[in-house]
Image (cartoon, rainbow, N blue to C red; front, side, top):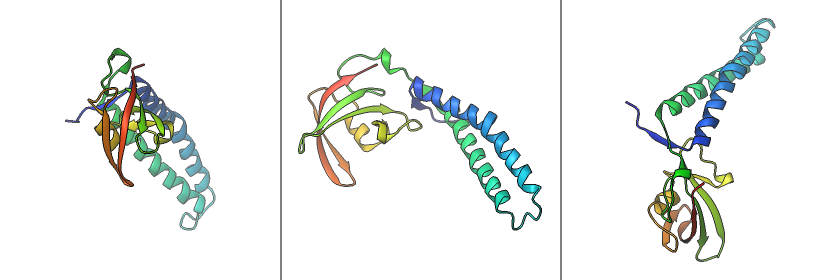
Length: 158
């Protein structure tokens, strides 16, 4: 039995869209590429054929991964939450107490995390440190660069 994995509604929709794209668009394109490459003759030294087969392998692996993510998904709508405590789906404004650098983060599921967009996985060290804390609390996070102290400035659910 699969363990349930939390995901936001937007993350779930994105995974479903990627799965649909990979099955209905990417898969047929790769099959077409393989067929075209086969027409070029000897498969042993046919770089186009080997590249297309590698693409096919990657795509099929990603399809299996996405199907697994969908079957394990527990969709949680953070807009239904209120309060000042950090929970899954919260948008959190924190400040580094040493540098005064502010960061805007959203705590999301592992399949939708994207650090460049400020979307951090609930399994990340910073998210684990923030969960259950509230506005005004100070948290110590162990990062690869060492320990960092953050203060929670704001918690928003939308």
